[in-house]
Image: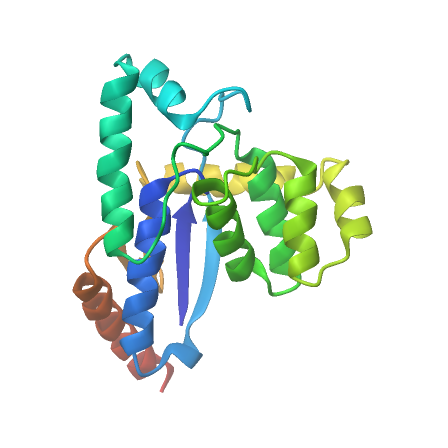
Length: 216
């Protein structure tokens, strides 16, 4: 059974949702029969990557609030992340356009490494303070995943996977996705947001049971 997940690697709730979904999958007895595909979503398509700013400054400007208020909001999200077993370091996070990161994810999908790449990009952005729009960061992740970095450099210097990202974003618009994370189970059920683990568990069991019955 296929589960599609629309996500943006600069979305904190997407990382939290990933962890909660994984917790449900760990309890699920048929996880070996689940295929996961990550889909591109752009929260801030016009964002200009700026390593000289931190995420508090970016959020303050984006929402028209003070830096102190932005830091308070980020602290709240960091606490949510901690409850999910994640460590967010917003003081180091670099505001970055995620389009190239999404192109990279489409590249890794060819080699069956998309889920690992998604995790690595989340960690790079939220924990390690790395620029996910930087070629060196993507090369480093590719190397850790055992991928051909020369091939990656060639692909990323072209317009490869540009249209794949655009098509994912368009598809999200067509099916009514307004925010991420957005999980689609067997093209029948959907979960919007970083819901609690039991919500994922119930939807997994229901959708898989129906899928299993239909395939038999």
